[in-house]
Image (tube, rainbow, N blue to C red; front, side, top):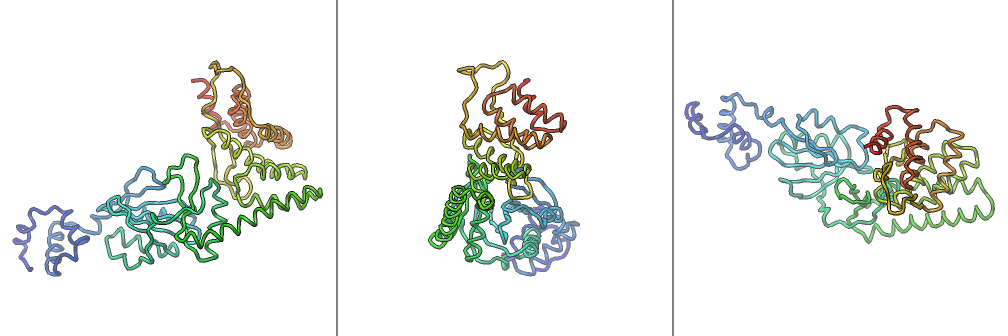
Length: 395
């Protein structure tokens, strides 16, 4: 269809700019080439650049409220150090969405059309992912870059755990066996316990890999018991360090490691292990404990560098049924005593003070918790957790 300019204006009079752009970008296979040329001519007559017109998209980081931006800004968010298992969604001008998540050695892309999940596929590396997203956001042909399609709704959870390090170990073992897997975080599963879920496509092939790793851990436990019985402290320390590297949600591992490190005079490392033991113990004791978690360098305490406060603690002057302190398990009291001892060697260690403050708060020992948080504010006047606790008690 070849039309004169006056005919174009009359023919497309009822078409909004968005309709014309949609036709030339999203529905081009529905029209003959000559008609698409007429649409392009009409857009040019109106002074509308289709590429600039659609360069308005939305991104959302880990399920947060979407924000509007252009393509350059959006793609810049996918940095080389984009965090493992974090997700970024890209919604183009006409509403389709790709949710991109960093996996252990690859990226996974989840495809949504008008908020309805379609399928997922893996992309080998960041350059390939950026190329794909560039085409998707410009509404150009990108589907030829899709590899094998997967329906994650049909995948099964191999493992649920709060430990990112343990998930990492299992995912690495699966990758070595060339078995596909993907991790779902509490951001999307809404798991109240904060557990990660490791999904696999073929459970029968993945389960033996997990069982082999679990057998190795059981063997390490046995070796640790044997080393303790033989009073082989150096060997015992090494075994507990290896167990701790798996990030198991077992406070005893970190308690034993912290004790051994403390006896060896390695006070800072002992504090890291005991703080992690405290964080795991308090989480098991009360799901209302809220931790101030900061991403550390990895290893001991990497996931729980700073233990936060218990917001549900009683305020001064409030009564509780027995008007008494809450009992806590003996091992938590043991952790507290060891941390107090380490504070003598590391008097300005904020992590130790935060952990001691949390233990006092969950025990409903408000005066002691206030004392701990005031110590923190003396050392770090801008500490938000400490100030928030004081504000809560004064409200």
